Length: 423
Image (cartoon, rainbow, N blue to C red; front, side, top):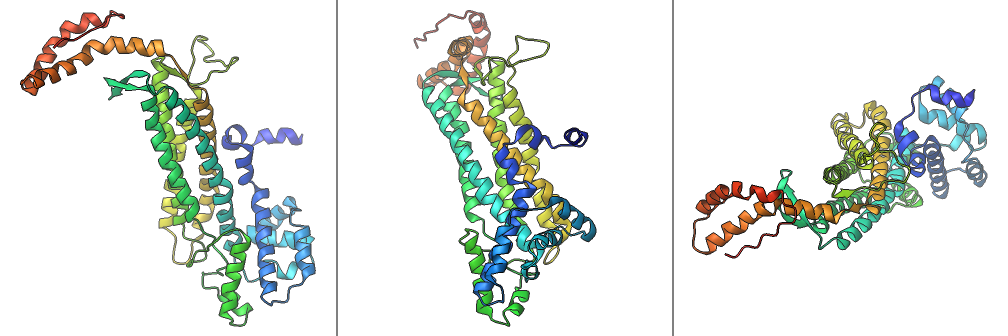
């Protein structure tokens, strides 16, 4: 059965289990190949406007069949030709016989390949992330404001330290997220269109089409760039845009992954202390064997996927470093995996973090109990400062406070003890 066949092959959990339908579609074959066809239409329109023998009927035919993709035919063509772009040129030409001679006219494969990445990454992906990140920041800001004055035990080296507040700790998370917002905005705003650059970036094929008219070649590049909604194209390319562009985008996603991992690790530590919990659904099961457990499963998922997102930056870094001269095809297979996986992974950790920040539960009484446990030891710092103010040596005072520490131990067990120092 056709439906059963789906379960007889590997399916990426990023699509089948985690990522949103919108982001999964963004990196789908349909999205990619319909974008290719739009780019071929833009190219034909600009070439016609600049004087090449292309008719309105040919362009209309291309527009009419832009969404009609015979994927089976394209797969068979690629099997024969061993070339994905030419397979889709042939498939498109099959349903556009009149326009067949002018589809992909003068272009190289990277005209559709790289320019499609330029369209998908900033418009559909980075903009989506900025909206998701803004929601997370908003929810977390509300949480920080609500608990701005609730004292809690601070930790350094995961050892009890001086007091902070629940809201102040959330501001540490917020600050990192705001830095990620800045980085993603910059990455989006810096992205350009590859443009209409020819086989090695020299535009020689288009110069030949326009009989040496350099101005028309420049205008073609400008017109197609404008049709796609970009303000600028890269001034210089080889056959591809620089693979440093991928490094720029994915490094910011990796940085976001590090932020989310830190936030969710903090939540997991606080969940163990029973001071803070992530949302727990009414029918959710914490453990198959221990029903009393309330595992921080969302935070754990974020940490797990964030680790994957962080390490994916190695792929574009290495790819950029080994591109030979005007291009090398050893980037292609790697980018088919690393680019979609980075964006799909970032998508799910952001949506999960939003869910977490919308339902964080705080237990003030537990927090107060932990503070009272440590108050006698925190008092030693006040003793040191009082001794120094009275003219004592801080190092000697510190030594004396360590001598006093065992005497304070019995008070740690007395939950309601209140220590008032009169120095």
